[in-house]
Image (cartoon, rainbow, N blue to C red; front, side):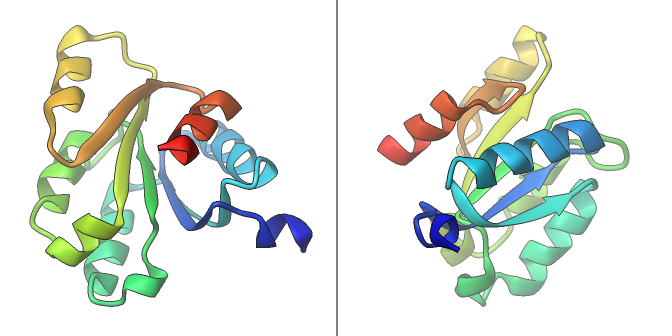
Length: 136
């Protein structure tokens, strides 16, 4: 219970179709008191639906979103295109970070110029990366 009280963020969303990466990221977030509640999604469409359905209910929205690029049905970039159509209040509340194993320079450049993306980070999420987010 003490750990939950000291968490930096109330809600953190992770979108990754790789179940192992999803588990590792979730554990890293909770273990390091980064997020009190982790919303885990293995499909970007499901995560987007949650955001669309709750865009006017700020208390249930994640403050941080970690998303992978390469996923079936809807890629991280497809998600970001749809995310851009959501309410200003939602986009002002949520901070999006791309977490990917890509080494494609075009993908990295595309992620870095997207106005809705705070930063690009190579997998896996590590404590130092979470600490840098908290520090800003």
